[in-house]
Length: 182
Image 1 (tube, rainbow, N blue to C red):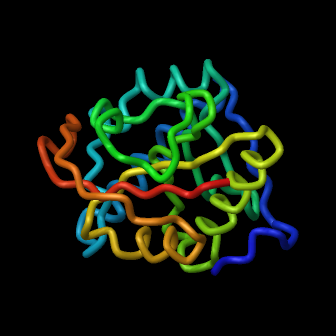
Image 2: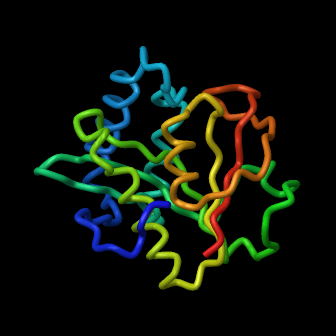
């Protein structure tokens, strides 16, 4: 399992609105660079993540950035809002919405992939949740995104179920749901 107790070499910080253009360029570049990848995220710029989604997350201080070597290396959104289908799932624990963090749109720049950045980002989320008395972290991932699934399982997340969910970028499709109890 991934060691979340070691010191992290990355700093995760909330984005500011003046960083929106950098965030938009990050996701556009990530989507373009992964368009032919076997494990592409199936995101479509302008649809998911949309400008409204990103700006709303920045305003709510729920969009987090990782800078490495002077570059934007990773982005993710952390909030309490799972897809509507999350409501009908039998999770490992029954907790209030405010006791759960949901990870959305976690991406790592291709220039930094394979260097443990995503694992460090998730480790930082786990530590943040421990400090804030959050009881669970949840997320959904496409079944063919094997690198993400491998990462989450290595960090202690448990596969909960597969659910058909609708997102504007993917349409109605199967997603795998994962949960980590804190």
